[in-house]
Length: 397
Image (tube, rainbow, N blue to C red; front, side, top):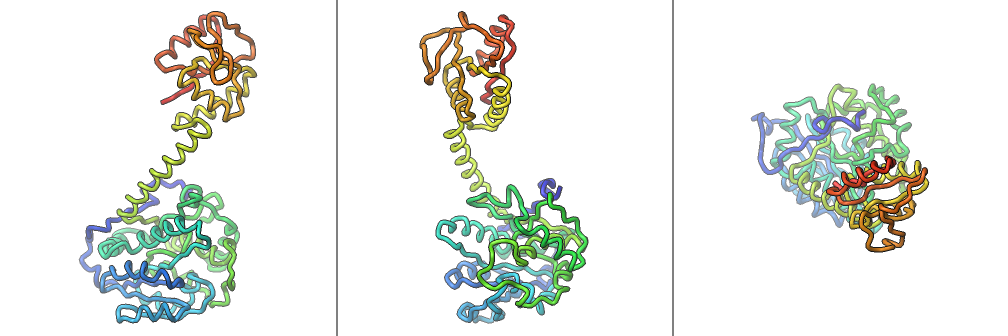
């Protein structure tokens, strides 16, 4: 399955602080950055990226707003006015179409803004993902172009969305677009293996590409009228289908698409993942008493075990016994009691405590050994001495 390819087949991490160029003629390549901008308050963010670019790279700014175009009035930039329809997709397929194939390699990027204030942190991360992994530094651009010169890669795209809802990076997803992508592929005569179970990896029109891999996408004479007027739906429009078809446009030409990360972004992303995973495990521990991957295994094993035994007891009432009890309660399993070797209390966690020496075993009983691992073998021998084998271990590491 496409989504389950080996890591080295899917990702490409490129240095952004050291030029690693094997081809000495990078500067002679015909290269352009196409930028679509709409949000005036964000201009300085993107100028910081664009001012880093090598001098041989052309920069074309597209916008429906004169004020934005006027802010790029130096000779470093070429500006083009577009209609306020179709967003970044029409900027690529309509506004830029006369220029795209003048270049061997192109990068296309656009701005992004949250619709609601609570989305800002997520959208800021998405912007960083898009721009850092396209235009992190001058050296990064050299290294990206070098990758194209020395590989069968046709397109490099940023990491799929990751943020508040984790999004496509973990789970993939077509949304409402699978049939639209299939239909669009047929209309463009694109031959590619488009299967529902193979989630796309292109979720935006942000990419580096060999311009020649895009020819079938431009074989249709796109116009602004092909795109919906505002307000556009969040999913299911032609725009969303075009975003997801990009990798198949590339596949049709015999090239491959990879997810690219600048080395700096990769480091930041790992740090973000560490923070998110820590918060996730803390939540799982608070709610379910699950704080490790072994704990997840316990969750499934105990759930299955309880379905087979009407009366559940926990052998061990110490710290691990209480952890196991917490997990049981999260599963709506109410143990009948704790079993201990040496009884000191009659109740623990609100349920009875029984001494093994005078405990009565019944037919439908199941025991979860929840004592410290150093006692588990002794407990197993104690149970089997009584000819009782309906038990499992609550694993802790």
